[in-house]
Image 1 (cartoon, rainbow, N blue to C red):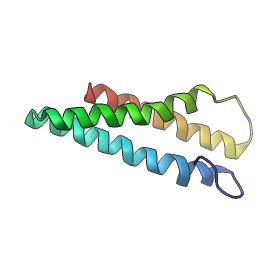
Image 2 (tube, rainbow, N blue to C red):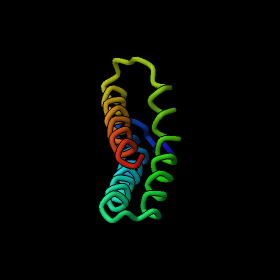
Image 3 (cartoon, rainbow, N blue to C red):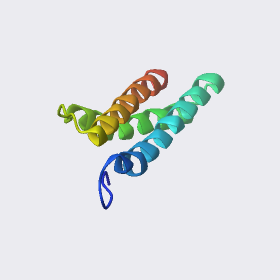
Length: 94
């Protein structure tokens, strides 16, 4: 799921960042809908989406090793952005 033929930074963009970014945005929308309208279902969906995204994002960031390879550095920056976006969306969801 996290690699494409040829590897490199594009693997992080298309196979990791894009799907997780969509999941995190959906989490935020569901959380805001739950807060705005008092919808318990939307809040439950937001918590579930935050949990699923966290099960992928947190181990991904925790397993990173320092590198000087430009492709890997770019990928690690994307992973940290995902982590902070997930943290913000989870805070709103909870």
